Length: 133
Image (cartoon, rainbow, N blue to C red; front, side):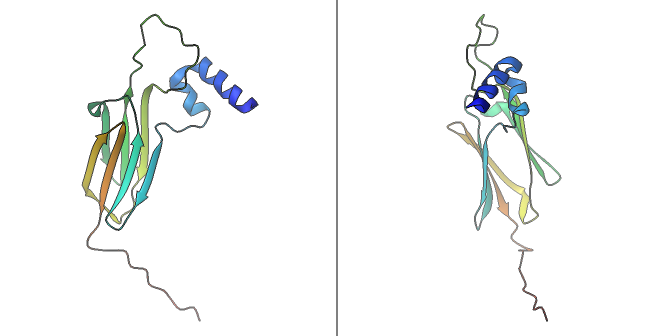
């Protein structure tokens, strides 16, 4: 209970841009999973438009970044409680070599960004068991 109250007070005092990083919360939340065909990254970013999201590949690094605007900013209001995050965001993921960074697809639907990266068709990773003597 004390920890939750501390987080609420800290978030209220430092504002939306500093609070998440200071209390160890990663924003935006994401799920990463793979199947036999591809790697899937699903990122929750409700309240943002697709053109406000950047998806970039730098070497083997996938960077998802953007800016979520506070619709009430500069409207003469004072927050009593603020749990939604606003401001700049960035998430970076190292992509394993078994996925083809030349074959990436990104779609945005219902506040979720879905990035799919196809598996490499040649050079399939083969596990070879070595007998220990």
